[in-house]
Image (cartoon, rainbow, N blue to C red):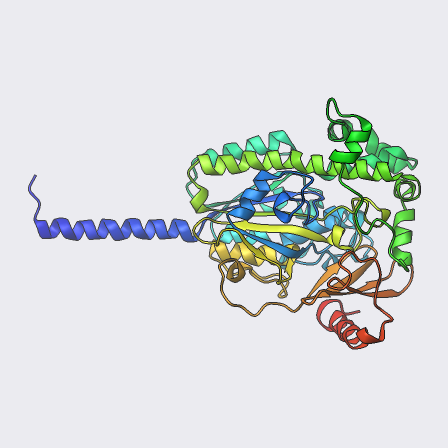
Length: 473
């Protein structure tokens, strides 16, 4: 059939620009996959320089995207941190069923019905307005009022382990008629919690936890197993991570920290009775459990790549909090020390986020910044707590006026950290206590500088910032 050349040219142009517009739409509203692990400290990746483990999946995200070294949770314990992720608010914004400010797991799980304002400004609420499909799989640890199903997610797997990664991969490989947001909430290396717990599960609460922990204990035992053919002497000489530089309790340690430890017999037992070799074995198992979860992350990354969607997918990776891992002779979390509060945060989108960049300057809040960042990439403005900021300008190498300070809550107190590495901590679990720490002068937080005359001015400034910008009391 004959077609006029001019008409053919005109139609070709229309088709070209039409396809270009479709490609543009596809690129500007990517699929977004948020991989979220439990109890991983910022230094627990080989890309962060840790030589005692290998994390090729995490390293792949870092090598092909940006890694932030100064990222913090809003609260270093599971449920409050997760409430923050979905709402973009501090956990302390909410009150529990007794009217108390939410700062620990029990209170967080007992958050009653939330306001319509909160429901209208959650992360999934914004993404539904942006016409995103919503998928959630894995660990919840959330109140019923803020559960994934309540907020509109399609819940694709309650498994937290191998099955979760496989089910996520199936969805990734499927055909989608619109962009999607997927949260994959993997459990490990959280199983490290059970090592100290089973040594002294004397309370009814802890005994009940152990009774339900068959899979967790089996996974932990596998992680603790000494490699075949390796003697005990060789194991501790060549395979076990050394004790951390801040192994001993902080000089003039706050009473709030002591009280936190003594509230749970197993934590007190670990501090007082674990030998050096037990602490090192704890660290070894923590590293192996991190490798366990890294393998699950690899399953997800493989599915994204093999589906041909890697260049149309924004991948975000982080954790809810860290683990003390023998620092200050502690395990578990809930403190404001770096091991517990400083978490990994990485973002990768090939062709849009420069590869292999490390940001060691800007302060990032996982709980406050995740919502505006994801909304920004989804093409919608998302605001809950106005102190949250989209990371997109930083991720794409643009100049931006960034925050000078950042607040973090916990069940034992609250803190503000500034861009220069000063941390002002106000404890309240055992009465009023305050500390000023300096991460540049003392990165392992072995001492504090609260009474040092040289720090009087920055201490006063941070007190004011604490009260005026972050935690008015």
